[in-house]
Image (cartoon, rainbow, N blue to C red):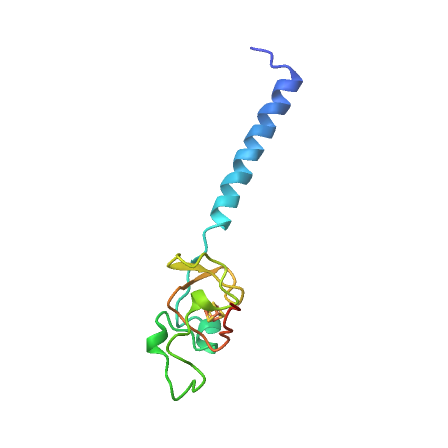
Length: 106
Ligand code: SF4
């Protein structure tokens, strides 16, 4: 049987642990697109398309209001879907809207 020095065994364990953590991290870093029917989204009146918002239900909604122009949007302006401060572990649509919309400054 081949003898493996303790230091080498330790390094192999470190490499294996790092690989496992990297895999777990990449799984966590992949939030899925929110469904309009999910409780949180539904309670906020979230729609993937701002044009589909019920004007009677949300009279403060304006046509130009979109997720990518909201303070809570965490993506780049050019991204189609991104995370949002209010929808934890979910992606919202750049053209979406919910009743917590707050226009970005500038
Ligand atoms: S808080 Fe803003 S970015 Fe998040 S869903 Fe509502 S409008 Fe979109």
